[in-house]
Image (cartoon, rainbow, N blue to C red; front, top):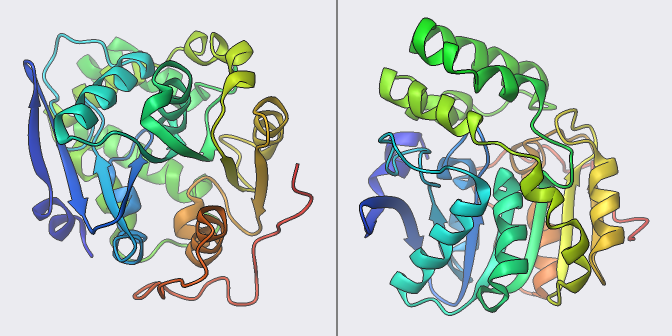
Length: 300
């Protein structure tokens, strides 16, 4: 689906003076999919049709991202995002869920697992931030207040598009995907909000979790595109070492946006993790990895 079709599926819920836009589709065990920066819930649109056949799929736009509240004057850090996700799930009446996080969404998922463990039944991290692996240089530069004041939305949008196209994907993404991922930030309001989001990236907020990861007590799977230059696979290896019982699945021929580079391999890894024998077919996605299966070993 294109980004407009995806946005048309979004609902809105108010949390105090803020609001969150989200997709809620399917029935069954709840599954929460958390995006990173500089994307939004559309990141998961390629997997949504198949996952919603077996699960209630909940995909929020984090505060300040996508089409959630982008006004000024609030803390956008991953710690506060986790608190917002806890409040959002409470508002929806969701006791706990399988939580899947990519990039900074993985950092939010780690906070949920450590600080709100009752919310997480299973944890899956994909090319996630962790420890002091972040923020990457591009995000440090984006977060400087001068960017919001001196660079137009068009200039920032063009620079991000070039950077993600060059290094975010191992193969050319399907038509419209890259544009859709960045669409909410193509306006001046969106650009300013994205700069504020980047300024809130703080490595201390994963470092403070480092000693607590040993207490994560839910089944954990790490799915990593092995050619990622933003979050190299060595960080997935370290997470697998630190979280009890965690296993790492290395996905070949994939970079940071592993769910777009190798969607079938990612779905296989997810359904293996969920213990599902009957697996929906991932329709509408190019069989990019038909001869490039994910690399399951060694499982750490």
